[in-house]
Each structure stands twice: as structure tokens, then as C-alpha cells.
Image 1 (cartoon, rainbow, N blue to C red):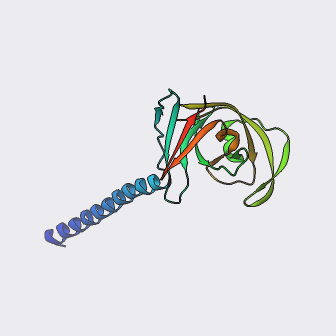
Image 2 (cartoon, one colour):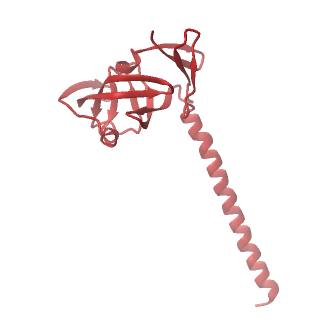
Image 3 (cartoon, rainbow, N blue to C red):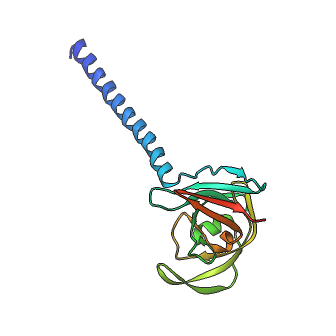
Length: 173
């Protein structure tokens, strides 16, 4: 093998490495864009209303839903706002990570049919600078999502105003 053949082989290897790195960077870049489209509220911003109350402005995602990052008992979670859900509904695998209390079970009717859930209570729930306390919740063993349904047990404590593709959550007086 000549020196020229060795140089060509090394050049081809570096060419392949450059292509692999370029593709990896493109995947990394576009993955961030796709995640932003799925949850455009990964860092919800809080504002003070004219009356001095905290409010959070949420953008609708590509599917028309409002998702946001929030906290339950100081631990980060993802909420999917659901005005059709009576309570905050937490998948069992997330409730275990959050160490939420689990009380008596009862049956609920969901979009996927009837299922048994367990009562629970959230000491503190945060979205941006909005804090809610002692929020009724349920733990749903048959719900396999990584999102928590933010139902009316939390949303009834807020004022909601939708304008175009933005939903404003505001503390109540």
C-alpha cells in the first residue's frame, strides 16, 4: 500500500466522521425545535396584571393543546390543561416519584372509559409565579402518560382568558 492510498483512506474516514457529526448536530438542532412545538411553554413567564395579580401566558401547541412545565410540591412536572377533567389527574408512575399520598379508590369516567383511581391531595402546585395550595387530585394507575392533566380542581382557582392562540391564567382576588 502506498503513502497516497493511506492518505486517501484517512481522508475518507475523516469525511465519514464529518458527515456523522453534521447529521448528529442537525438531529440535535431539529429535536429542540420539535420539542418547542410540542410544549412551547417549557419556561412559562409570569407577569403582574394591572390589578397586581400574577398571571401566566401560555401558547397553544401545534395540536391545539396547552401544555406547560410546572411544579408539584417543588418537583418539576408537565401539565396538560384539561377543563373536562374534574380533578388534577396524575399517572401512577409520576405520583410515586412525587411521593403523593394515596387514599381510598373510586371509579371515574374518562375519555378511555371507566377506571379506578385513588384520591390524593397536592400540598402546593405552581405554574410560573402562580401558587395553588391543597389541590384535590387523583392518581390514575391506567394513565400511562408523562403529562399530568390539570383539571378543574386547580383551574377553578384561576381566571382563564383565551385570546387567539394564547391562554392567560390569572390568580383570583
